[in-house]
Image (cartoon, rainbow, N blue to C red):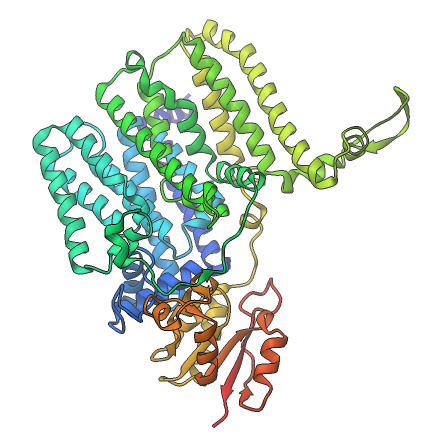
Length: 620
């Protein structure tokens, strides 16, 4: 009896909710450390860290002519650069800093979810982040997603809900301004936040918040004037910004022509990796238009703001990735900037909406569940398609069952005339569709009994979305909702490998040397070479490369072309080449007697071949 009372006391006190949130946070930390040490460095990570180091140490200034290509807002480089100066240049400093930001993000998630939904919803919100391998992975490498996600969460912590102190509203608006000056894609945040503050907190609070945010944005623009206008010139089609657009001509070599199906697949991948926030907003979003279902006006206003913010971000980032050709498969990564907004929206809906009879909404929600499940199935075809196609089925001939069995693929091939790749996609999408149909049928059977037994006023639409969200929470750390690459980690320590490579390069490449970089997409090894002169446009590899054009003009903007490539190769003291990039052209150029090859570095990745760096020193 005493044990039973003790258990009830723990549950009623919310101690389990606190322990659940703490354990989720610890799990996030452990996963983040693993990802930080096992994830290969990407181009953006190397660019943010290395350019930031150059800027913070004063070697160059953002938007400087003949400096690094500053293709984003200044803080996206300066903040990572500051970590390199405050601690030690290298990948370890950058990645450990973003792990700290991830924990700070989780704290903000817990505070805001607790404010609107209580302890248990706070624990669930933290778990929604911690159990998502895609999200933890994205927040464990030193790119701008975690910077923005953390700023955004704390902006909402300071400003969302009723009775926020004026000083918190002002700081929150200033933080929104900092987010904009970190990444230009956060442009909608500050105006939408200002409108919300005016609406919810009144004229005086709105004026102070608007001033704080405007002052923050204005000061940073003034410090980096007028070069910062080059960022806006890339997005705003007005002749007034022509002086800040890249001159020099030439054609970008990265200009893929991608068909419709890969764009749909990219969207499905985004849904998989951000399943809970996307389904929550898509499934519950319609409820913000029905004021009569809401118990609290402040919560209704907060939900409208979050829904509008998420909707604008989805549209703008889908346009930039899925509609344009520049980076179609970046959609999933783009969602990581703001996906936590959807988690808060789910909490507010469940705590603030009371709806029983709404047949149109129920029908809409059922369609959302079926469509989302079908897309998740389609997006998982590489993981689940082969297994499904190998399922043994009875053999049929002439409409009669024959002895033995045949794989499911045989039916797709013989009856539908599908190739194996086509069958993979189709069977995976059908599996997702059937899963949703079965789930809905089960819910239709359960809901009347729940209402009769407990007097529940639960609406079928709300019930279906919430059950599907719970299913997504359980399945987040599985191949269904996370790509295999984010579940099966390389056992090698990438940070230690870079440090070993960096130490070797530092011994062989003296300060003041001119270095031609062909060492891989990420220039992280250059962080370990103080005082070395890298040809700056190479930081962005082929993304800053142009076919043709005026080399001198392109160099002013941090770009390069064939003319500059040949000039640099002819004058470089060292040429660093990743083993897998060493092709016949390089062989012919380097084996003429002008260069001496030194001992190769160790492999950067223990799970990929030819990732070591070959070092060629010019003979004098």
